[in-house]
Image (cartoon, helix red, strand yellow):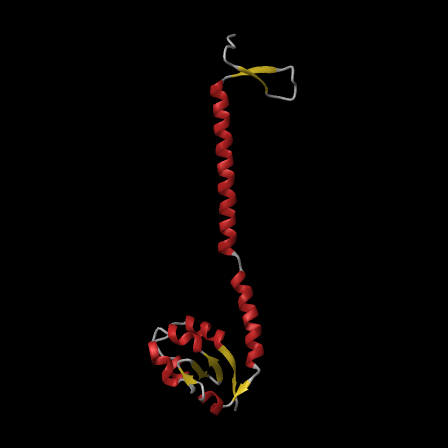
Length: 150
């Protein structure tokens, strides 16, 4: 057996069983170890991304927001008080006897200044018009600040 250039490596728990390991075998073992390491890193990265994508953070935020809205909804506003908030920089609207402060949404409103047509007044009819997608009905609850006094 030609052992020139080979190193002797113990490959099991018994030190007296020593086998020659060629350079080619060591390179293959190294490549396999690197591949296993890369696959492990890829799996961990995939798991991390999955946690980020499917994290139910927004659901908890919605519950917290809902409880805040419940607290705000207990406040009642008169029609005269609401009518004072009729500007682009201070815009309240009434929809189905609920009061909404949409000031922060005025600039983002896809219909432009149409939202200002009923600023400080009842917008129920315009809100439920055919121009609004169904997602608007969920979005509006984020702006609720109370009820209209009867």
